[in-house]
Image (cartoon, rainbow over all chains, first blue to last red; front, top):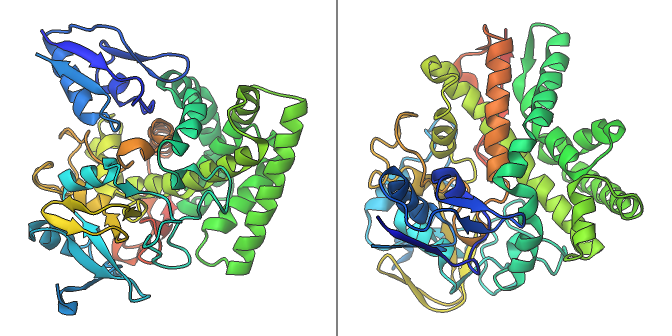
Amino acid sequence: MAGISVDTGKCIGSAQCVLAAPDVFDQDDDGFVVVLDDSPSGAAEAAARTARGLCPAQAISVHD
Amino acid sequence: MTSTDLVPFMLRRPGAPFPPPEYADFRERPGLVKAALPSGETVWLVTRHEEVRSVLTDPRISSNPTHEGFPRPSRTVGAPSADDVPGWFVSLDPPDHNRFRKALIPEFTVRRIRSLRPAVEEIVDRSIDQMTAKGDSADLVEDFSLSVPSLVISSLLGVPKVDRDFFEEKTKVLVTLTSTDEERDKASEHLLRYINRLISIKSKRPGDDLISKLLQGGLLTPQELSGVAMLLLIAGHETTANNISLGVVTLLQQKQWIGDERAIEELLRYHSVADLVALRVAVEDVEIGGQLVRKGEGIVPLVAGANHDPEVFERPHEFDPSRSATGHVAFGYGVHQCLGQNLVRLEMDVAYRGLFQRLPNLEIAVPLEELQFKYDGVLFGLHALPVRW
């Protein structure tokens, strides 16, 4: 299990995280990232790590 | 570095593969590669995936063409600044850039783009109807690939249906090779005038479209909004058209991938049409990949180089949708990463479904070696794609 946090000040709403890890991330009405699951495990955790790498604004942190 | 180390800026040439084979050699070299622009000025070329991403996220590297040393490869390659065109936010750095991005992202969320699918399907269907009504062959670029994104953008902006032919005709002039500079300037002027009129109409009678919502949002002035609308049009038209056309060629070569959802991401990586789009300048001394880049030196991160970097994508020159192509930088990276990327994915998906389902015998009507690729433009693509069905 990993801990997920996001820096909404950095988020640019590219939605790469929503596409890569839809169980962990979503977008609010303004388009900014929302964390749905801040401690994912298994496949969702792996997807969240992928999302961290894809985020163009480097707004996602994964804490072990 | 001596002048003999300089390479030419434009490395594409007829008959050679794209991306240019030189990129593989550049990735092997230590540091960066210095290229000469036609003007005699020099820029740094960046070809490795990791370094392209660093350049596009480093706050010491700017997108603002008003900075000394910003690359100006030619009249057609090079961005206007936000000083020239208010609302031209791709030419702004944070924090000036943030207000524009913030205003626009609600219109490009995953949910919002998914809701556009029926509208895009209708546009694709109608474009195929019109193309097939003319006979059993066509130039796919002219009759389909350019029409679809133009109609999608006009629908997004809230251009009334009766004006869409006008809008499409003018936007085509902007991206057609045979247009003269005068024709292009005139079309651009007509479009800008039209968009300004549309903004004034929408401010009195708002609808459910991007222009109305941005007017109501109040984050942008009407003048900025007109620049934003032009930018969305220019950014979303030829790029998408090139992706659609090149994708048809590639999928017809490897038909087993038609209908496979993974093909879209791999097509984006494989073709990397916007190789020369991201121009940058260092506004402080910065080290990139072991290379010292001085303040005021131009930098060109080559996205096709990054997307064919074997460190990240094995067998990069093979089209293989079974790989994980995510992580490509076909849409750039950093705060300027393409706002419309999910719309492009949707348009490509709907376009291929429509074409290959309705025209199962679709084929290229000329030998492959006769296809006219865009070796001379900023964007890679096809000038024409003769097809029959």
